[in-house]
Length: 300
Image (cartoon, rainbow, N blue to C red; front, top):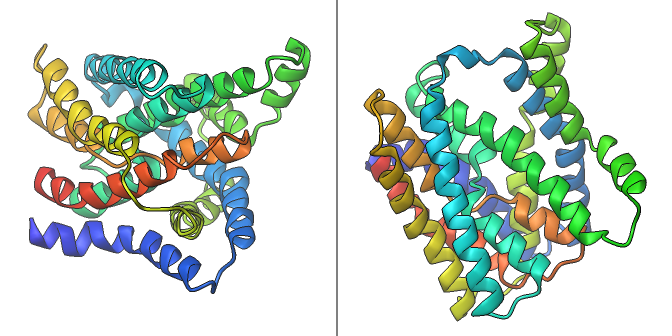
């Protein structure tokens, strides 16, 4: 456990800590971090997603496990959404993104690199399945719904035009389409994507650390409740639903590892993009990132 923590988890986590420290010391400005985050989101992350989705062997997935994991996400999402609206009196869009923060794990940029270091690129197929699910279906769902909720006064045509120009959605669509047709991207394109995509995780985590350094870390009642749902309820629900059916134990173990991960940065990124208050989302990401260190080391 200590070796996994010090050799696999902390090196990845340290990039966000470095960004947080650089932000607190004003060595890197908030504006510079937002620019870096925008570049990582619009250029580097699509380059990371496309080859992953294009080349993944969907036949190696246990889709019943993915479906059960999705069921756990739905249960936790609805629980958080209702609590945020009726108990904490949040505006709907803030409640929507808080609920997203409890189910959208930082799998692509955090759990996947950690699991690759531990199990190797061929030994973490369940994590890859979770990454593909979250990077395609879950992420696309929240990009589309958040945009529609934030721009309810605009026409359907305007919303559609804005969404079809989103580089992340384009990468997802091209990856899924080419995979379904059995078309493997040419090697030079894959090399270019691999080269650019390698910078997505460190750039995003560093920028996130800088941006979060400007927020209060004090855990309010709302922060504690949302973070608790993410760190406790989500893994419990995942364990409960994965008890149904029969599959290799590694799938149950690694999907639990993914479910126990910290809140993903994308809820925060969407909140900034659509000018939703971030005084709860930001501390949730920080606290879940810190408090999940030891639980991830134990589960890994």
